[in-house]
Amino acid sequence: MNQLARFAGILTLTGAGLISISSGPGVLAESGGSEAREDADPVPERLTHEMADAMRAEQVELEKLLAALALRAETYEASQLRFVCEETLIRSSFKTGSGRLSDQDVGRFDYLLGRTSSGEIVERRRPLEKKGSSRWKDLKLSHPQPYRWTLLFSRHNQQLFNYRLAGQEVVHFRLVTVIEFDAILPFTDGTDITQWSGTAYIDAESLDVLRVEAAPPGQQIRLEAATRDYHQAFRLMGIPLRRRPRVHVHEVDLTYQKDGLRLPTLVMTQLYTTTNIEERSLHKQVMQIFTDYQLFQVETDEKLREIRDSANP
Image (tube, rainbow, N blue to C red; front, side, top):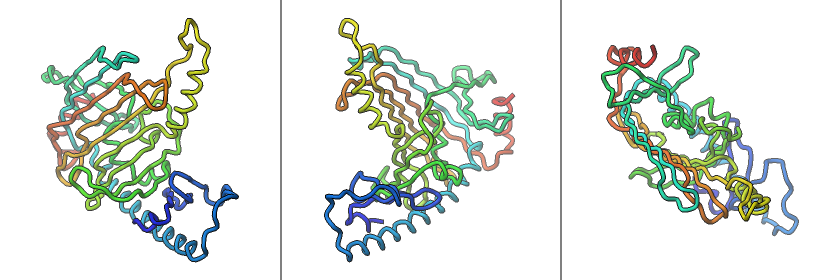
């Protein structure tokens, strides 16, 4: 996997295959695209051949890994209606500029995923303090369903992302393969994983997703432009008549392990405001903590069916 490190190159792949190669850190060149810099030093022919061999090997390795991850995702796709758990949902707001906590709401729910009559998978929540009640409700959040990240490498989603191998690390005491992913679709409301780019940490042995760190595609580039526009905006009594630039951060840990699955345990979604690139002020934060998972062997299990009937009247 690290053969390309010595050449400081980056290989980009989608489900369709190799799409780009860079000549150095952080420099992506579209395959068959832009010409090399005129002032670049010539590359020795021997080194060029070595780079080509290393890139081909890296491409094959990533293609094999993506194929294996697609198969692993099938297990999670078949299991998404198999569990019930408890969720602690903490929604916090902070004062602009100072970052001091201004408001906080804490709720505890029974939590599961349900299927609507149209086939859509949705979140269902029932307040724990009203556990005797059969009333479940939809509560829309501005980020993806945590379980959806287990399907990041499904065959369908592989058509909607570009992927890059980024070495190996240790995360949650496990050896992981690091894969960077870039969304092809634009960021709109942020409620689907296909609108996010970032880094996924994959258990090297089980191929489970252990952690995800995500942000809107191209956020840093847009942030620089938005910050510049903010400072150039018309001011009324010294106050810019333009909203402060915003920064989205989304992180998911999947550390609960049962029946061969890794399930979400902690989700942190943060919205920052900023007036310069280096400094940020926390504006809103949503934290989800998942505990007390119950998994059922089959979706038609009598107990699970009883719960689902109450959640999907």
